[in-house]
Amino acid sequence: MKTITEPSREIELAAETEILIIGGGPAGIAAATAAARCGARVMLLEKYGFLGGMGTAAMVTNFCGLHASINGSIQQIVRGIADDILERLDKLDGLREPHVVKAKGGGHDVAAQAYDTSAYKMATDDLLLSAGVDIRFHTFAVGTVMNGARIDAVLVETKSGRKAIKAEMFIDCSGDGDLAYWSGADCVKGDDNGFMAYPTTMFRVANVDDDKVHKEGKPNLSDLIAAASKDYDLPRKTGVLGSQPHAGEWRVNLTQISRDGTPIDGSDWNDLGFAETEGRRQSQEYFRFLKDRVPGFENSYLLETAPQVGIRETRRIVGEYVLSKDDILSCRDFEESIGCNGWPLEQHLKGSAKWTFLGGRGYHQIPYGTTLPKGVDNLLVAGRCASTTPEGQASLRVSGPCFAMGQAVGTAAELARQKGVTPNKIDVRALQDKLVSDGAFIGDI
Image (tube, rainbow, N blue to C red; front, side, top):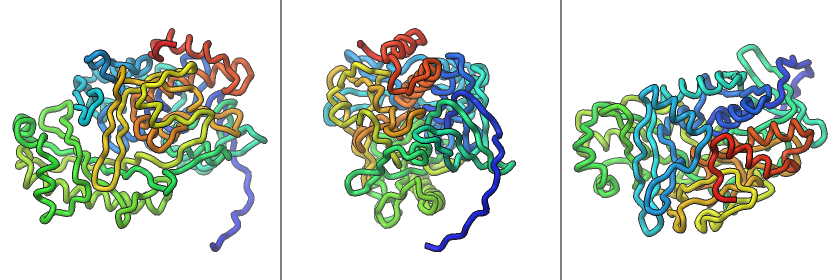
């Protein structure tokens, strides 16, 4: 590999704060709000000009994992800061009622909840600004400056050049585990064979006949794809069509991005660039299929493609606890619970998605240890890069448990900072009491 030597230079220390958070997705939104409400000076760095993570940048437009089926009824199990977001979205007329996702092959039904992307951006702006969070948009974190086992500063690239930002506590909500990886924490990618869940480019379609789709088209989508396989290039044989908060608008979750059948790596710049053009190519082909073959889409038009490809899985930390498939499907309790999750194992395999629904009471608890990376003293992690097995990540990566983990680590970071201890040494019962008093649901402990 050829290299060049970058000249040594002094980096401007642009800011100092108490808690610095990387990434403005569901985990980062909740972490920043929680830490600020606990009294900390909080800065959040986001590479885009808006919050929401994959929910906005990849146009997911659907909250998953906020609800679980308990005693035969769909109930919200992620509360606290998630409630504040839902309330703001509702006031902006940007939220639909939860819709049921039917369990197949046993287990409980679950629910997802569609939202309007623009409303979500505005709602989260208001939430963080009202909490006093210092949001720095268009700020791309690129590295760390370490002091032994502690992060001293994060290096960032901005339109004003390279900067450094110091903090006492750091929270990695990047989705890709960037901060954990740069600081030397143990991280893994994929399963034993390196396989990671396939990404998807989402797109939205407008001028759809809603009644006709519900009556004739949506239930038969897999059959329609199979019948069209000779006439269209459709690598994924199953998928999801979701109606949006406004009439005639539908979200399309159908594409599956790969290189010669192998999933791309969203933490690799070359793969990520390829995925964008391939995702838009597939979006055109799937839209052509929808317009030609799916009842209700005959007069529709392609409204927009997502600003970026939707990445489901890259790095995961190896934390003090690794959440497994068995933990999730057995609805396991944990003495150090920081939240709950009832989403199925949603594994995106070649050509399809495999769903394994929870039995029992319909949800499991999330242990604090999944957020604690090994080897770095002043770092917490929340979101899809938390400590799980590949199968565990297939459930814990969605927005509901990310909100729960985010609120917990934001609270924990400030408790640790105030006590002058590392996050793994805080009084977890005090953390749990604070979460419950702030409206979170962490199950029976």
